[in-house]
Length: 390
Image 1: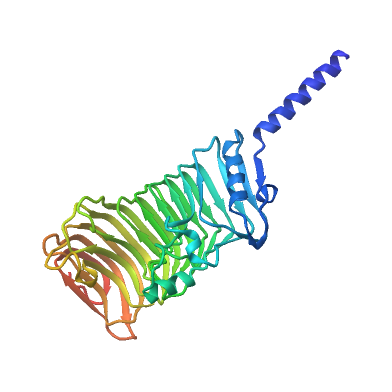
Image 2: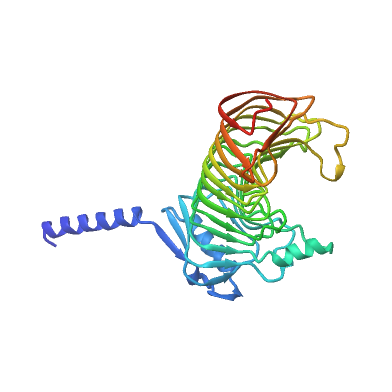
């Protein structure tokens, strides 16, 4: 071979090798036997596609084409060798028999994965049968959360639609630096315990541009949550954005550095809620900012409840040990369906401190609303309607 041809061949091989290294690997679930007919169990093909992607030394994609895929409870486990993306153009459906998801508590679980993205797609958990079972008082499974991130670092959930989860729709637990963006969550307003997005024990989570219509909290914030940013949230129906309930256990972590901004609540049971059990605890709430919020016919636009004691079990004649301080409400406007639009029912043993109201305008049926304060200290600035009781 001539010298020039050898050089050209070496250059060509080098370029081809470089391309193969940099190009992401793609694993189509159809290639592993998945059937997009909504009837054939595709759980194992999905898990096999995940395993192949997880082993890839190149950035890898698990691709789910259009169609309906029947999936039972599945664990997508790491750690993986490189960045991994699950790109869903189809719909994942749970079995009609709600017992099929078992008592594990999850439907789709991603665990111990770094650099994970879940993009697009629809999850249809068919939760109505499970809700009916719970309501009837029959023997029922524990129920399943639709999609859970456990110990995921550098994660993304984007463009996902979740319909009729048995329990919580999206759970972010013990994670770091996870983005949830442009998700759509839909369940009936009477569906029990169907929180839209639940964040717990996690740091650096952002939730943006999402629409949540469900039967429980639109976003629930559990112990150990730090540096949570929420923006452009459409909530309702639902139970609002809730910090808590906290203090169920004595040894419990706190919640700090949480911001919700530029959001709208429509027909929700609650707006901005902090909820704590009336019992001793090490839990706390600190540096919370609610600003630029519109309320449209919300039952309790602003509420702190430190006397949470459902069915008077486990907490009668006790007081909350949750220390709540540095909570700011700024530019909160709109309408309340109840006359007492602002409720601060704080603990006699741990009064709320550093509560700041800045430009609040909430009305009740175009009439004057009221405020309620108990065991609280704070300041006001600007126009405050209803009249402050701080």
